[in-house]
Length: 565
Image 1 (cartoon, rainbow, N blue to C red):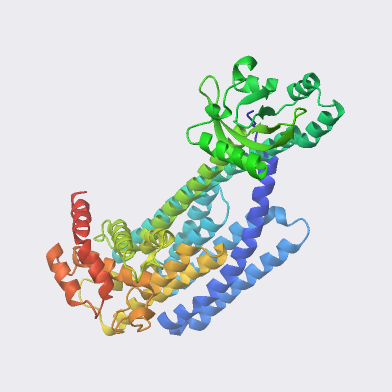
Image 2: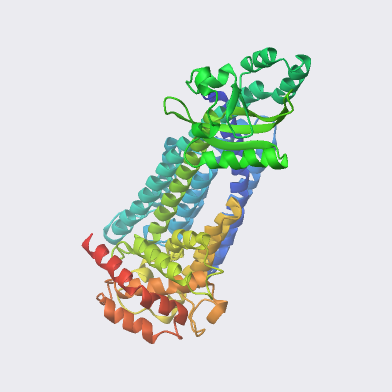
């Protein structure tokens, strides 16, 4: 039995509108908190404009409060998309006005628009076209305000304008692809849910009170073999009677039709021969429990093979039936659940697609920070491979084995790429400086740990508890801590440093040592290994250094493959 229904466009639109409205309210509250939170950045970076910037931010927050109030009024919910679009444009305008005070195109405050764009579009259920329209509109607001306030595209300003535009277009491209992919998955998931609901309704109609009907008719027909067979032939489910050896003694017409067997050929054959590989033994064990202990068979899901070799999914229930001659036979009711299983597989495939899309979006957003440095290459891809190797080796260590589960390895593989996401908030003049940083510049650089952890904390708060986001916060905050307590930002030491951050710390340093930078040449593997060994017990956890030495040839192989690509 195959069940398929056409997707209800109106139903999907209602579901999408409800989801959009729910997430809009959450996003507006988060936007207010987040917008005011960055006043701390104003205080640190441009104290002289703090009051003015705070008024800009407060004005935008009051606007968001007004929009939230409007959405509570009857009939305004239908305009939620227009209100969100207006809020994003006005937020872009507020940030652009701040940027004009800090040098126009040379100001790094445009990163606030990028974060607002990426965060809002990633959270809201938008089509690809809507995401692109919002992204380009926010970019247009930024460019128009800066040009209108006297920021000329000449020499140095032109270079910064091109740099800003590159990051805008990159974020627009990533969020547009993500929105398109998410919307496609939502439609497919909606259709799958409709199909599953229809299948359940149809199967319920077939199976309602089946066992009660069988027992009632058996009593009414006074155990007459002929009338007993009549009853079974008119039941839509598959029914068989087996003797104590599991041999088929009676089968209804429906059973013969589904299995493409002549009814007479089914008799005197073991039912186990119709089961798929491995399921015959499972059926025999269930029959023994029924015959010897009287344990009814309930909803046992197995696979059977028809006479033409077709495999079908079935659900088997059974109980004992006392015959007139005193013998007890097994009565089995077999339901074809192939359609339900097909829908379940489609739902699982949809969930897998959603997870794949989420991973791609995470890697794309993480690369926004890395792409600002043209010499990092495939840094993120290498980092996640190095961390998975180290975690896999540490899982064999009795000390770490209780912590490093399969889920831990999967989470660190995903979240390790987010370790430097906070660098989006660091100015290019510091991030790309070819020489040593001044004390003030280094203190500014260290802020990327707190910035990255704060961004991921906001994301987890909106999404609910997500294990890789929680681990990502640990890594972003603590991957520059050192085993002896001399690291930053918290000066944590030894086991006080989260294990995930300790693993990423070694992987990140190894990749930095073996990669070319504007201020140094790349070290070979042997030199990097010797430096890591010398830092064991000072910078690095000795257990992690030992794991690195066991698997160092894999590190070397990944590095060489990256150089060849």
